Image (tube, rainbow, N blue to C red):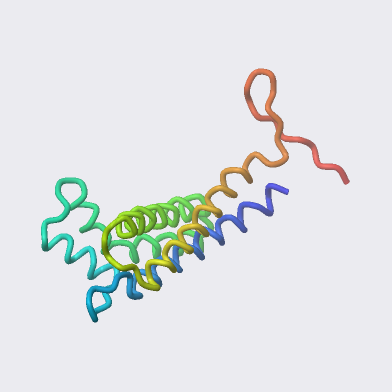
Length: 153
């Protein structure tokens, strides 16, 4: 059973991460009659000096999101599922944090923000299945370790 969970979990993480990148180009917020993508939002925040220190670094790193997700897809195509899941999860986590911050701001959110929140949920579901899938078919021993159960049939 665990063997079939990992590829599905990786597919969820990667699919969600690719959707996060797509949603990052959609309108995230409305300001008057203008709609702004996530990249325009972080650029404006950086230009206005709203973030400082680590926040400013995180804002500047947002522009690397498509590269990180492309790296995840490349890792998956090379059979490096764990690396793909980590990179995809990193992209999803970054998007989730930015979506949370934008959602708490006084800005009016738009379709891109909503699509990102849904895509992040898919990434988190895949990451959770990836972690849980490792231990399906295992039992915890008295010593605290995991022991694989023998398959029947």
